[in-house]
Image 1 (tube, rainbow, N blue to C red):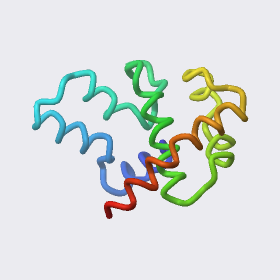
Image 2 (cartoon, helix red, strand yellow):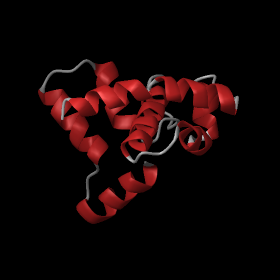
Image 3 (cartoon, one colour):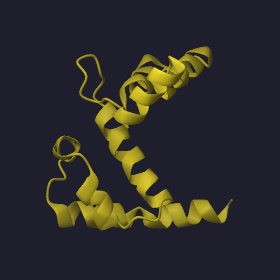
Image 4 (tube, rainbow, N blue to C red):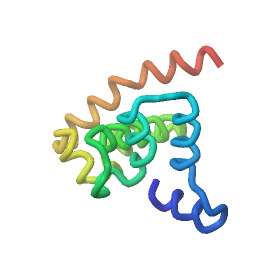
Length: 112
């Protein structure tokens, strides 16, 4: 995610996190939500909030589901520091937890 953010910055001079934060401010979202939007792609930055790593994990998992990747692949490719932060360092437990969310994706796709 950080790579995408850096590419956006170099090409556009702004990234999707900044755009999201601008919109959230316009819509009067609370500061904690603004902080998550601003920092989820770089969740361990010094001024990031405590929910940023959790949202990073959620975006990683959702993106993998969207690309039809398995829960095992998603667990394997989740940044180790994020897995440690969310206290899911054992691969099989993390994979099992990710798989338990899959039915939500299937249900959401049924509405599209």
